[in-house]
Length: 188
Image (cartoon, rainbow, N blue to C red; front, side):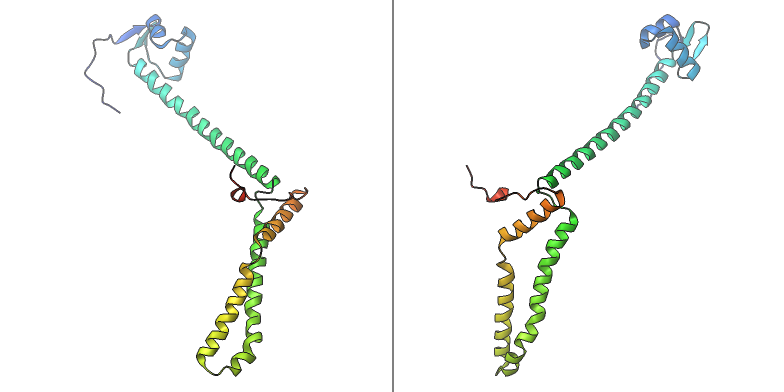
């Protein structure tokens, strides 16, 4: 905030009529501001010239309140819009609840885990009969590749179909037939 300059040539006191004119207020409002301590009465019908900057400061301070209120209302409106968008996307099957996603990922991880846990029992006799360490390594590499290839070849459309079926079940609607992701649509 800048420092006040040298004393001006303005009078120390101004009349009620001048105060009303300068501030654009009614007599009743000026009297209310006097009772509130926002402006200073010098004598009957006369007000201190210092009342003008005091009034301006009070109005600036008062203006900060509505600004904070408007920011809060804006945040609330944005939150409501996000919630409505989320509900719409969920109804359309484009957004799944967290637990449905966890189910899909957990099932995938269980499939991988089960395949690797079975690897030891499947390979033990062959590894025992292997003639050398490089032969053991080659057998292990081949079987690990088989497991990972089988998991990676899970059809993407089948996974999407399962996700859509789960979304439809949760939203209590029919699954969308022939669901194609946006990035899979041919360019027109």
